[in-house]
Length: 85
Image (tube, rainbow, N blue to C red; front, side, top):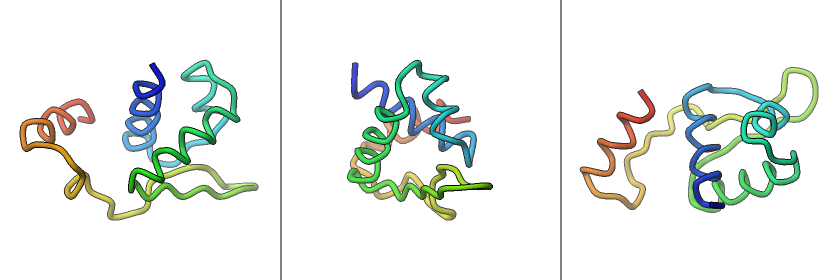
């Protein structure tokens, strides 16, 4: 279950751009602390997640990030891109 939430959070951020941990927590019905832990897991997996505090801050994936280079097959890449469309 945990891995599905982590993937869901990644997809949510990837599709929506900048968001807040509060929005993510509400969307996935988890605590903000859980969101921080999962964002850390995404970051440790090699996804460049940026987090800024304060007014105008939020969580987003670094500009220019592409799914290429992650460990998956060509078929899996196509499925991921289709899901993100």
